[in-house]
Length: 219
Image (tube, rainbow, N blue to C red; front, side, top):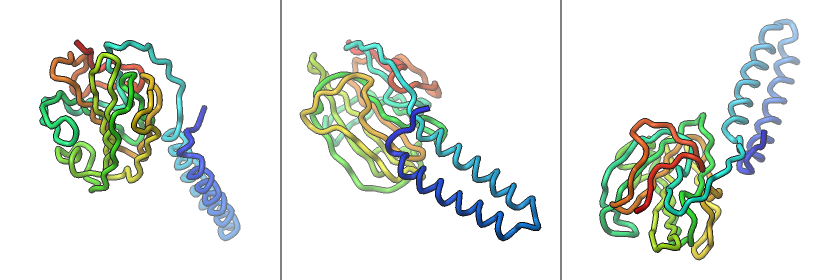
């Protein structure tokens, strides 16, 4: 299993702390065998949870300029028309995907194109499914324009637990559909804002696979 680079330091530090904790339990509770066993069990479960959170599975994306691919593993929690104010200042079709702590948290490009806009916003840490999380939470807004001139906006949104958003692209960069553009730690959400004539191909509460699931088709 490949581990994402965002987890390397945390796993190393956590492993060292857990090792010291277990060594201490064995030393101070030599006459109470069940205590070190319980500490070992809890430590193993905690470390395995961290491992699965930072896992980086191989994903092969079928490139198609007419498809919008899910930017993340998770569940569709919003499909609606909204008035986007930060970049387009106009109506757009929004699809939001919520990532629970058990999902892979890599964020992938919904389509290929040129990055036209990148902006980070500090903010609150409302739960990721809160209606105001798109505009009030810590977030990063990214816009990509494809060869046909269609612009798609992705918004990484921190949740109540996710307090670190990472993005790896910059304005003017060429990106490939399915390629990694960011990572959000410990529960979060990604919004995708599309042209109004885009055909949505997913339903509310449907599970998505980042880099694989087709969430919309462009006209």
